Amino acid sequence: MGGIIRYSLTFTLEMAGVGLRYWAIVWASSPFFSASAVHTLAIIGAVGPPCYSLLAWVGPPGGNRMMRWKVRGRTPTITEQAILAEAFRTLTNRGITPPRFVYTVDQPDLNASVIGHTLYLHRDLYASPHLVAVIAHEMGHYHSSDGRLALALHRLTIPGGWLMVSFTMRLTQVIGSLLNPIMRLLNALSYIVLRIEIAVPAQIGQFAQYVFFLGLIALVGGIGIVATTPLWRSHIRQREFAADRYAAQHGFACALTLFLRQAQLDEMNLPWNQASFHPSVEERLAALQPYLTHSSDDGVEYAASQPSC
Image (cartoon, rainbow, N blue to C red; front, side, top):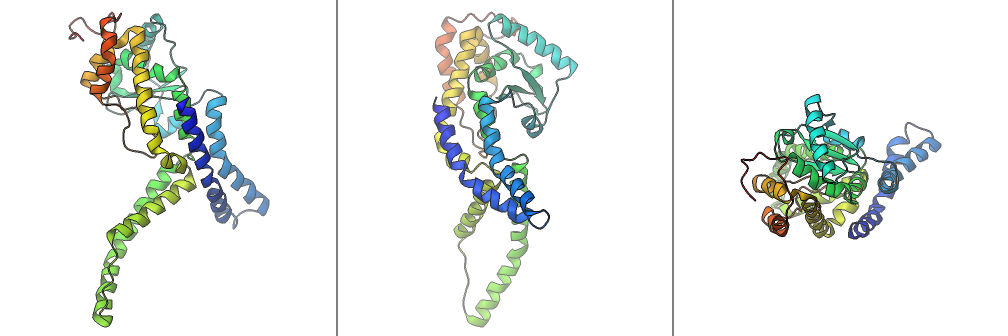
């Protein structure tokens, strides 16, 4: 329930960017289209992302189209499909229903995530003995509201919005570096002629850059997420613990413990935020400890030579 309340607040704050986006579309498209076409396009562009976000809760299964393009997911190869089939058999025997959609992300690490009704597995995970344990954890997100919540948050930003903001910010940095020698020259001339030294504190420049960055996010969508980022920290931590419990309750406590001792499962974090809100490995291992005593893990996905939990 906490996730829905936070999402509602995020969604409300996100509406502040709708008017700005409407005005920007009208301004950019008015030289090329008729007045009726301009306003139609502006309305679609302004309210489209929020409406699309709401569909993550009540609409058809998602996370397998735009998100697939965003993370560059691909269809698993024949070999990967065979590995998945074996893993899903193990999960089904433990009472876990497999996901509706599965895609591979060509990233060289042991990671996975659930967005909407779609499971994304990083390439190296297929060769790991920890695959089933990781999928069991992800199914904890899948069979709760976590996947739909993640999809709803991602949909608040227009497709390609992150690339647009990233490109614009880099362009401003390049322009700033080109203007820097000119500003130094003007500063030197003003001192020579007027005996006035123009000094702009670095903090002002950084603040102006951050305000410009927030303005761009408001245009492409996501300002509500940025504004409520501190509120999501505790929720994301608790949902990770809940997914660990889900895997442990289905007999994967030992398997997940072995995985966490060797790798960090970061998954996809909050949009527009590079920091990880996940619990530390030590905290997760401590939370799994009570399940190890009564674990029913038979080690299907591990060789007999694996160390004990």
